[in-house]
Length: 319
Image 1: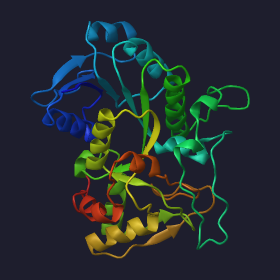
Image 2: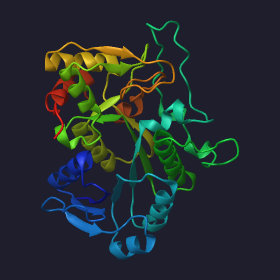
Image 3: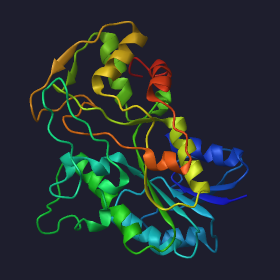
Image 4: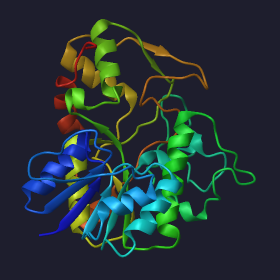
């Protein structure tokens, strides 16, 4: 039996992770700011992770076999966690994101890019491996030649890149950074509303804004994401690892899958270069290679197998 701490774990696949760990017979504790009570049989610690003194006080003399950090968004949060959990855990798993690879949020940086498409109808794709990005090689945000971007996507992606760098640069414990694909499914629990955007627009006959030649991107089911984090907590490998279901899918295929479920044809509206499109419509290479995790023994599902069910449980209307 392992002693596992989940930082966050109060919603979506973090909540599912907590119940999976409990049901597997491990000793599970959640640490958050007290926004909601954990499920029965789960321990609870209340603290603001940004407050180092409060975090230490809440932990007391406790230590853990594994810490799964669901809510680390900045290098400052990572630095606090690195100091506080040094000597307290045998393994640290941070939930990161595929957004760390996004070329659009790199003012400069060593991310491999796919070649430009030969024609609008046949965009080239090059799923990125973990080796495509080494956060330790990146200069800190705001360093010369790397001005911070003002838009939310940059802030989120750069925060995750720099948080990964803190854990990797001078390891205080065995560390894994799980670079998660876009997580779908769960109906109303899927709080981002991105899949609901498509279900509602297509069901209502409202046009969906897309790029002329959208690139495929990677997805993972929320249950599979929780399973992957639990599996990772039980393993011994370290470093970054991509988590994505098999079968990268572009926005057109996603829309057609939605249309098949709601019984209404899709109306598309092509946006110009640089214009904002619907979620998951990308004008750049944006898919991940899941080969490392697969080789380590995790059996991913296929997007085509679980997507219809995820669409079916998505609310069609607000409220």
